[in-house]
Amino acid sequence: MNRIRYTLLSDGSSDKMLMPILDWLLRRHCPNYALEPEWADLPRLRLFPKKLPERIKKTLEFYDPDLLFIHRDEEGQTFELRRRQIINALAGQTRTPAVCVIPVRMQEAWLLFNECAIRKAAGNPNGRMSLQMPTIGTIEALPNPKQVLFDLISNASGLSPTRRKKLRPQKLAHLISQSIDDFTPLNQLSAFRALEQELSGVVRDAGWDA
Image (cartoon, rainbow, N blue to C red; front, side, top):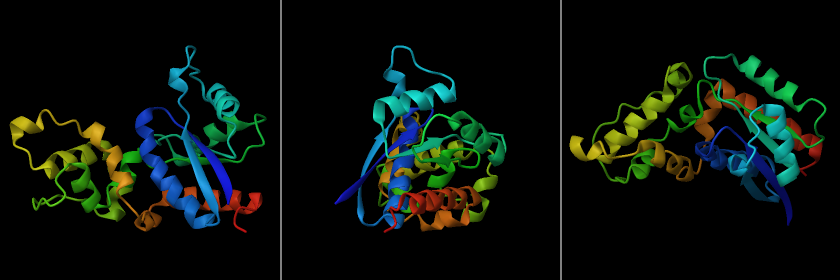
């Protein structure tokens, strides 16, 4: 079977939670290809490149992927500004296909639609306590989706207030995307639609949709 090796370049290891989403999208658009995903572990380098053009260059040198995903949270900037920053950083660097991954506000927003996965990540899949889940239509308007997600994980754990203080939701959040089989609800989000549209064009140009 043909394979697609892709690398996700992001700001930190917590961004690995995006990879099940990227896998799902690629399986939809490239059903005849096996996937070999990698996260660009640049922080392990002694001289960690801080500027995005340098980080892209190092990622391509170390991983030589067939496809490069570049993640930047919007974080108060406009989607178009973040996209322009990525495109400018890519200019003249590579012929490797690249796709921008730019969630509105921050990536945690893309994990706020699946209550069952949140309960499972919290270690209490059969919990019955009520969770104040945001509706999918309001997710991109949340000022701090990361805190909303962490609060949901804490509440879903069912732990007492004392034991909840020892819980580390940031360590559990990555388990949510691993427990989701279908990310179709995210099609209602503008940033996710932009990601899929850009990926679709790259897949078509590379002939991976055959």
